[in-house]
Structures are given as structure tokens and as C-alpha cells.
Image (cartoon, rainbow over all chains, first blue to last red; front, top):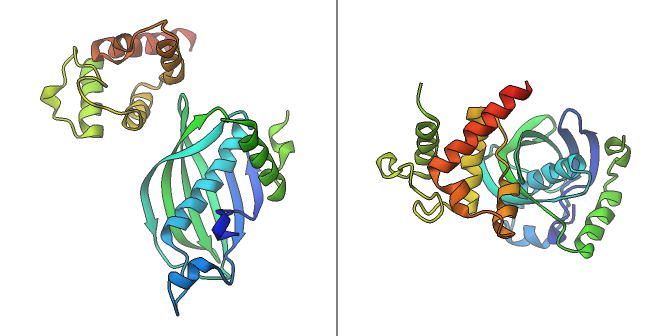
Length: 156
Length: 95
């Protein structure tokens, strides 16, 4: 994780396009400027960044299902619950699954666990837009390589 | 069994917190009821689930943007209900 750059996902553990599910992992850093304010003496992952992490996990699932032809953009967060704290150096596992694919939008459910214990979950809605420019697509492809996106999982 | 319009109106009322009695077959979802694109995603989701179809929102939007259709054709509720009936019928025919 690089919180300041919104790099929330370290690696894709499993992507099953046919089952419409993904599992990813991320290591919360020991230090970050974010923890200097949230909170001094008691560093804690902000809940909003846990939601962002679930959104990014869902995003990689959708990118895989869409074969990188559309970019998922977070549009709505529902039923988000932060059930327990996530601390620096925690290894988080995020599972996300597609619950509905509409015309130009999709919905997922995602869960964050630490050591097998549920820490957060949410229902998320995404709009699926054409990549607005080559820079963004190039960035996503570079990120995919960085986190070990299994391209073989989306090629016939 | 309630009509398609009744089901759609109930979905809109519950999804967008709009009084049910203000929603008529002549209501334009955008111009009269003030439903924005994000709220319409929730409505589309509920319609997809209730009728077992996939509202072709992207195709409709493209047709409107290209000047090949008007928003009234798809977003006045009596017309939206007719489009839903067509999609349900097409699904039944292909099943």
C-alpha cells in the first residue's frame, strides 16, 4: 500500500472471472503521513480508505470481466460498515464479488478481513465508462502489472 | 397482478422517496420527477431485478445523444413501461 498515492492493493491473490470473484491482499504500511493525523498516538486506517480499498478490489474484478475495455468508476457506496479497526502493519485480505451487471453500470459486494476476521464490508455501485484517454489506460495497465494481474484469466 | 406502470411507479417512489400519488403514466422521470442519472441506476437495478431483464440504458442514452430518439420515448413512464413490456416479451420469446 502507498496510501498517499491511493495505491491500496498490493497483489491479486485470485481472480475467477467465470465466478465473478476476486481476492486481493494489501499490507498496511507501518508509517504514513496519514497516520500522523489519524491519530497521533493511535494510528488507525481511516474508514474511508477501507471503502476505497474495497472499491479498488472491485474495480480490478470489473476490469478483468470487461477485459480492460471499460473503466469502472465508483458511483455509490451503500451499507458500508466498519466492524473493527485496521492498524499499521496489518495484512488485509479483500474479497469482492459481482452482484449485478447492468447496462453501463455494475454492483459488487466486498469484504475486508484481517487474520480471517471481518473488519469492513460494503455494497458498491460503479459506472463503466470508456477509458477517457490513453494515459489513464496506460496507468491502469502499469498498475495491473505491478499487482500481478493475471491476464491469462481473461484471455480465452 | 399489478401493471408494469404500477410496479415501476412503486420502485421509483421507494427508491427516490417520491410520493407515489405524484407519479403518473405521463410523468417524465427526469424533467418532472427530477431523477438524476445516479438515482436512475438504482431504479434500473430494481427494474432489472423485478422483471428479469437488462434495461439497455447505454443504448438509449446513445440514441438520445445522437438525436435518433427523444428522452420522452424512454423516460416518460408510460413509454418506459412499454419498453419494459417489450424486453420481457423478447426475453420470453428467446427462452
